[in-house]
Structure formats: C-alpha cells, structure tokens
Amino acid sequence: MMEALQDHPVWMAMPAWMVLSSLVAGLLILVLGEPYQRTRVVINLGAAVLKLVLVGFMLWGVGQGHDFEFRLPLLPGIDLYLHADSLSMLLATLSAILWLITTVYAIGYLEQSPNRCRFFGFFSLCVAATMGVSVAGNLFTFFLFYELLTLTTWPLVVHRGVSVALRAGKRYLAYTLGGGGIFLFGIIALYALMGDQVFTPGGFVDPDLPPALLIGIFLLLLVGVGVKAAMVPLHGWLPQAMVAPAPVSALLHAVAVVKAGAFGIVRLVYDVYGLDLVATLGMNHVLAIAAAITIVWGSLRALQASDIKQRLAFSTVSQVSYIALGVGIGSPMATIGGLVHLVHQGLMKITLFFCAGNLAETHGIKRVDQVDGMGRTMPWTMAAFTLAALGMIGVPPIAGFVSKWYLGLGGVENGQYWVLGVLVASTLLNAAYFLPVLRRAWFPRADAPDRGPGIHEAPLSLLIPTVATATFALGAGILAGMPFSPLQWAQFIGEQIYGVAP
Image (cartoon, rainbow, N blue to C red; front, side, top):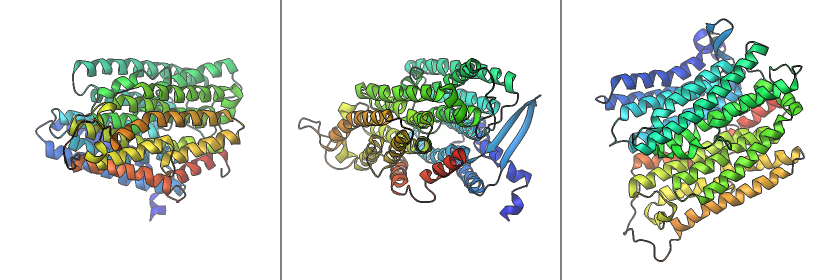
C-alpha cells in the first residue's frame, strides 16, 4: 500500500501539509479570539497531534528512501520548494514532539493569563515557520520561512506588554531583521552567479568562481544565520528575550529560533557550499574558531548571571555552538556529534526552562540564591532540573555526554586536538554554573528560609511535560545505540554526507 502511495500527489506534498497543519491552526485561533478558549485548546492539541502523525509517516518514508516534495512557482526562476530529506526530518521530528509537549505546558502556564488566543495563535504560526525552515528545499524558501519565524516570534517575546518586554522585542527585531537583510544580500549575490539554489548534498556552488567572491558570500550567509544561532558577537538579543513567558523561552531555545540558525549553518556548509569547498576556502576553520569562542564565552557569562533564566540563556549561547563546532571540524564523528546535539540540546534545554517556569509560577523564585531547599519542596521539578543540568555538563549516560563524546572523537579523528581543550573547558564551566544551583536545591544552607513542611509541587499540567522531556533526555543517552535513537539518525545523515558509514 505504501509503495502505491509514494507517487500520489497528496503523499508527495506531505511537507506542505506538515507546514499547513500549524499554519491553519494558528490563523483559526487568531480569528476565533478570546471567547472560544475551549475550541482553541482543541485546535491546538489536535493540530499538534496531526503534525506528529504526519512527521511519523515522513520519517518512515525518508528512512525507506521515499521522496517528498512540493513546488509552487512564485516568480520566474524562483519556486517555493519544500523537500524532506534526512536532515530535514531531524529538526522536524524534534519540533513536532516538543511542540505537543510545550502546548500542554503552555495551556497550564497561561491558564489565568489574558490574551491567550493571541499567544497560542502566534505560537502555532511560529511552529509553522520552524517546520518550513526544516523542509525548505532551496535558499529562497529557507529565507522566506526564516523571516516568517522572526515575525511570528516577536509577538511572543513582547507578549506581557510591559516596558522591559517591549525593549527586548525592539532589540530582537533589530538583530534578527538586520541578520535577515544580510542573509538576503548573500542569497541575491549567489542567485546572480548560480541561478536556482536548490539544496544539494555536497553543495551546488561553483568552485571555479573567484575565491574572494566565494568567501565574501559565505561570510554574508554565515552572519545571516549566525544571528539566530546566537554566535558571538551576534547574540545580544537572546538574553534580553528572556522577559518572555517560560513557554516562549523554552520554544526559542529548544526548537525554534536558535535551532533555525544552527540548522542554517548546517545547510550552508553541507548543501550550499559543500564540505570540500568550505575546507578549500578555509571557512571551516573560521566557523570552528567562532564556535569555540562562543562556547567558552557563553559559559563565562552564564557563570556571572544570578537570574535563572539569564543563566540558562547564556548557557544556550554556549551549547548551540556545539552544533557549529561539529560542522566546522568537518570529520564524520564531529558531524554526528554536532547533528545529534541539535536534538539533545533541545531536550535538555526545554526541560531546564520548564523547571524555571515551575519555580517562578509556583513559588516566585527567579534567582539562583532563592532555590535553597527547593529539592525537598519541589522534588520532581528539581529532579528534572538536575537530570538536564547534569546532561548539559556531560555526565553519562545522559544525552549531553553522547554529543560531547562524538565531538571529542571528531576532533581527534581530524587531528584537531585543541577541540578537546574547548570541550574540557566548557564542561568545567558548565559544572561551575550548574552545580551551585543543585547544591542549593538539595543541600540548603543552615540559614535558608523555612518553606514549611510537605511538598508543594507545580500543577500536573506543568509537571508532566517537565518530567517527560527530562525522561527523553535520559532515554536519548541510555538508548543511543538503539535503531530509533537520535544518534542513529545522525549517523544515517553522516553516512549520506560522507558516502560511507562513519
């Protein structure tokens, strides 16, 4: 039956249905407005489940070698082109799973808040844009959804409407729209030279073009995606955006904006320029060094932050650049480490932001010095936080250890032993800014405030998603060798990139 369906137009256009499932949901919610809260919940959850089913079919199909694509001519020589490949499905699957979980969390988190329909409408549109980024088949389509992501996340960043949120939103737009403009300039330059820019394994850029021109265009494109990937010094918007509600912070850091930037770096190196040309131009070293600086610098800033969400934001600046580091190293093992960290970081970071939201909403705790004794008061929340934090440090067998292991092996494989120094420094700094939080939570000071007897946990609507993502982060590490694990899929992508099993 599946063989009969694979050439059917509806089956082929499944990437379009995947994008439309959340796009239509978002528009419906915005049109319905506030009086239809129960209908909004049904639409939200129904669309999230539908997307998960669609992604499941596509994941199976891509694994079996089936093709999914959708073309819509827009201008002469320019198509809206959606195409699912193994790399697409890595981000699409993560987004589909975490969108459903975050939707459940957000429903509980915003239960008594105003403007919920506006929030969930743009929330769904944001996911549609993320899905579009994941299945974009050419640079124009990627840019279209990349900028749509900026426009749909801005209302979420400024959702509270207070002055600090509006200032953060203005900064966010300045950085992301500025980066988008630079990215567009690079696309136009490349289009003038190469015409249609369909993502192609091994790259489509002509290596015989003048090296200086190729380097200039590469740097324009890298800056364009580096803004959303929060690479130093393009990261200034991210810590400021933490004024947004916890579900937004979780979405920005684990699934949407920073992942779109990191995903863009992966596409740029593997499917636009190609590994060989990037190495010939020396741009792999530029990318690896920029990533290493970001990893260490982000960790140093996290160490200085006293606000929990700010500390997690700078941690994201550091951790997302592991993906760029793996791409920059350019060896099979490093590629696997970078790609699988796209998933692993998402699972761990969304858990940490869920926990931060639980602490703030249940007990008003927003700073590190306020978490004394919370391990006894909120044992499930702090157990999830502990698991995700240890994973970020790289403690086995949690998912973060797998990423760092493969990155380290990749550095050795390519003779770049300095990578081990970066990973060790990052691990020590991760421990330095996470372990004090754990010590305060589980081993409070003698003069810590008395929070009263008994357990005062977050509501189940907030707790269940938190425990679920923490469990996934642990399972991704323990079950890394299983056929269905993120690591195995990253190895599948690596095999396609290098032509041999890594």
